[in-house]
Image 1: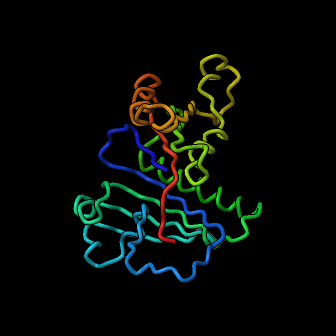
Image 2: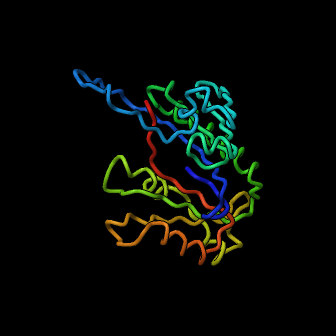
Image 3: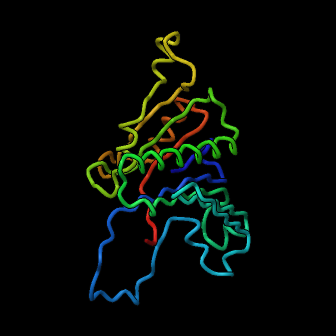
Length: 213
């Protein structure tokens, strides 16, 4: 999940969520020549040489771990990642994911979003655009579209019936831009055009990512 005020912002501010399901046991597979790839900032901090320009902090939220990774210019060069602030929510300790555990994940994500909004000075009445990246027809890539399909969009209500909007709600727009194989258009071009037209105060981008586990 990437949250930023503009699409071309140099500093990236990211919430990375690990929701691990069952582990698959692989036998008789030689992985000695394979390199493990990860999109998670905190997992890439794996050697002393990488620690220059990087600050890693760990916080316990009950059964959930919250990693905060701050990367400056030197760290960005060492990790080949954008400079900025990265939050990673690790829920691997929750194995059953029943209702109570899902509530814990929800509370942890809410807490992390509050930290992010405070860091970016996002106000309660700022307009939000939520973008669900990915192919909804491919299960590993469908996270973004599925989330957008389940959010409460309110921007049209503010436009048409503002008197019916209760306190505590903000303007929220949602879009699923699809993938280039379906549209023939680069996803960035679609999101950029919508952003220029809708003029949100900040954008939340949801997409599936890879981790070492």
